[in-house]
Image (cartoon, rainbow, N blue to C red):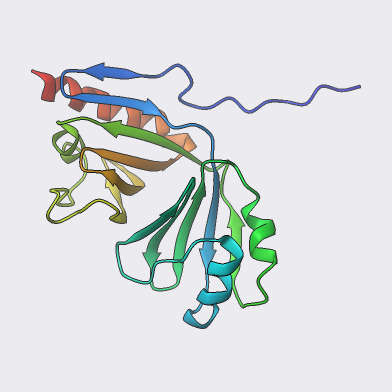
Length: 182
């Protein structure tokens, strides 16, 4: 019988811990790129067991599932328990487009007192707690790559990035963290 290949996380064995900051790869998760009109939100929210946020830059979380508002009809849904989000959406008899992007993305967790300073090294967005509160989410850039940024706590962010750019993003964060630690 043939062996099946196991996908290796692009940031496997990468970790940084320094003065005021820690950076680590997030565990594997299921990710869904979801597009839907306003009329479909109720049915999709019910099927996904999480209320899809309707406010720009916001998110909703329920257990291991997170829904990030990316645009007027666009969400990134992340399930850290690796649930089958496509099957959940199939239960909704509402107009929508759902694409599993789990293998396209990797996530980086960055936390500590210097987190805003580290991310400011590559992100032009105001990430102060007043401008980007806990639960805020946005598609933005870090260095030269597009990311989705989700503030999970006052001193913590989840950074979603395409796998092919994850090493670049991690290295840039690590370099900035070393500067912040000085």
